[in-house]
Amino acid sequence: MYRDHFGFTEQPFALTPNPDFLFLSTHHQEGFAHLLYGIDTHAGFIELTGEVGTGKTTLIRTFLNQLDPATHRTALIFNPTLSSLGLLQGINREFGLPCASSERGELLEALNRFLLEESSAGRTVVLVIDEAQNLSAEVLEHIRLISNLETERDKLIQIVLVGQPELKRLLALEELRQLNQRITVRYHLEPMGCDDTREYIRHRIRVAGGGREPVAFTLGAVKKIYRFSKGLPRLINAVCDRALLLAYTRDSREITASMAAEAIIDVRQEEGRRFPIPRKTLQFLTLVAAISIGVTLFNRADKEPPPPAVAGEATPAPTPAPAPQPPPLTGDAVRKSLVATAAGDNLVTAANALLGAWQAPAIDRAGHSDDIRTLAARRGFTATEIKGSLDDILRFDAPVLLQVELPDGTSRFLTLTAASNGSFTVVPAVAGKDSLSRGEIEAFWEGRAWMFWKNFHGIPLRTRPGSKGKGVKPLQELLKGAGFYDEKPTGDFDAATEEGIRRFQQSEGLQPDGKAGEKTLALLYRRAGGFFPPGLTGAKGSTQ
Image (cartoon, rainbow, N blue to C red; front, top):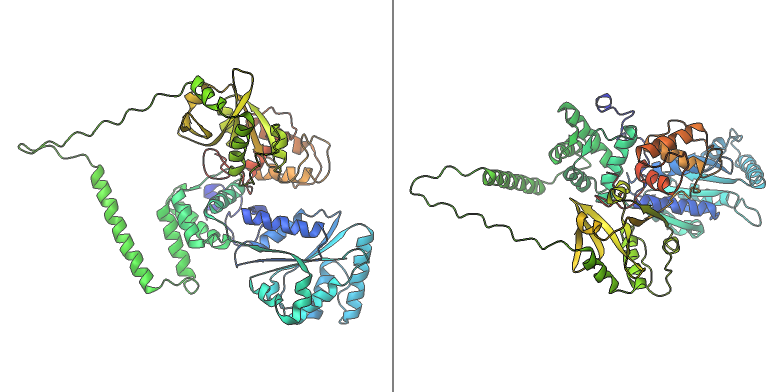
């Protein structure tokens, strides 16, 4: 109903798993990395668990889509009530093998031939079994026997078991100890945090809106949704879908905290058996609501202008004047403060503040490199130089190292970790201040800065027209997520890809050369959604 009203191309909060909407929260990124590691190292067995609604199915579907069909053969089994015979028939069916036989020996022989052929061709065979907690111990033991199909050097099939936490208890049974011992890669998918919840909502709206955000959720609304959902994507989707319907009926393009609360009540009523409200809790909430209304009325009355003075009444005392503000720091004062610290110690302090924004390990003061690019590479980052003004830095919305030139020809560094209302938080503090105004920074900074960013997909820098390979398809998917590529990602750097990059570069004020350089890639990861670069002007991953 609200889809056309807001201009969505599809429902942003549909409950069905859709890889197009994949949002890699911190936990999802870790889970994804475990899956890739297990497959790349031919671990044999991989276990992925998580509570209902954490996004396991969407994660594995997207994971399978990421595997190159030229080097992998994949199958997904989504029927956990199968018998051991039915499972084997289902596996053969998914791989396009003969599956009609009721003889396990025939089915297993066909599967073995297929696995040997794929191994000879250099391809990895991956089998994913979803909802595996519903499989019987007998079927799980049969899965272990399938994994025995191997050569002298390698496992012929990689098996991923996906399920709810009950799967871990099932595998811990004494009769399944041989299978449990073979699982070398395990990951338990946790729900999202509040910051991830906020970015998850924005990401789905951007994807459904073709790269735009036609409707916004206030921070208060997000907090209410997070407290109710506890970070579970399925519950977040249910509430957000109902909240958008409310916004549609009220012709609003902003979801407020009160609207989110109404949506939560509706969802609770629909699923009352799953989310009952105890009587004492309901009484407590009623009391809180009454207090909240009273506080609101008091604050409103407090903000109203006072009535006219009546003769004989005392005149209210005047409001005291605000305390005088300290004078702004001069450029010389900042340089004098910075020169007091050794260059190496200053760089490590500033760099660690930047790494801290990324939640990356700090660098030891001993044995570090004074080269910024080398220092960044030690923690898996690319350091990109930015030359220009503070407005150029704000365009990237990323924490940066400001390079400050001193009169003796040496340099010191200040990290900008946050920006709000013309004020910038800096590390280390200078002259006793950890917050500087734009004017104070412009008084000493000559326009050179360094941004750290992470190439999550390992896309080769300066990827250009005519290129092929694994880096091109992720590049096309980033462009698609940012709303600048409408085709199906092919892995070939074609004219549509080049044109998409040019249009994206123009929209971001970059040189439109059609090549995926450092600044282009850094911004694409921010605009495509689903990644978590720290923001400078707002919440983590902000792109505003």
